Length: 338
Image 1 (cartoon, rainbow, N blue to C red):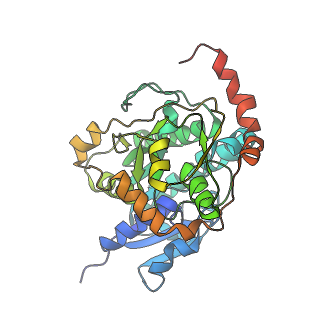
Image 2 (cartoon, rainbow, N blue to C red):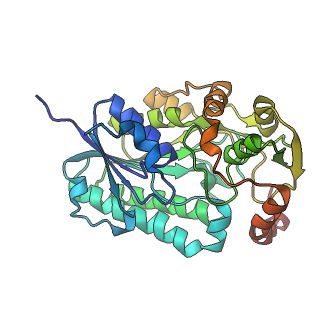
């Protein structure tokens, strides 16, 4: 009887990471999750609690050492661990660099020592900044805030380990991920978490600007499929955009969620449209999204109680939470950028 293949999922108790664990369970892997449970939740893995092939190491990635036994016999590493959100990154840039760059380096060193067959990095489309659309992988890089910079530098570190040490690395630049199990606590940010809590409270949706801005929403299980394909290929040193190549407006989301609306000021440094050109991953890996926007929203609404303990954001608290955003990112509004 052959032994199961071993996969490491950093941040595997988090939003996308827990969907990655689901995918790997379906493919009969032994999965070792590394998560410090700051953003992740053990509840996200509760449906695997009786599965002996899923284990959780409650550990900060910065504490990892190259000889860590967690990586023994590991074949694949999926690196999702890190910290997100725009405003906290502006306020705490050193922490973002420490976790998202140097934390990534620690994971890379463990993967190198274990001689893993494939390392897949969860990158962010925020590296493109205010990008031309649809956005291809060769688009110029211009991060607008420290979170975006830290994720891009983590990606560059991963490719440096590929070039210098021969570690087989691929990277997926995630556009607007959504789905069940997304984070319910922390800073003001992701539209789904904000709107779902407002819907539960019977409050109006706080729409930024006029709601015509569009986002390339991609469902978490589709992302997990893309990451699996990126690890399953013989290709290495590749970067792929992952979105649905079909941006949806915030107004369309409001229409699907059904509720009243109140408008809050448009923020600097945010694109009017995010739009992933996905031809490369479709051609090279045969990946395409399977979950439509309408179906994804329906799945989330079915589990809306998950967001009951999330912060309830209203115009006044949003204005307070985004003061730093306007203070620093507003400076770029006057430098001639479009």
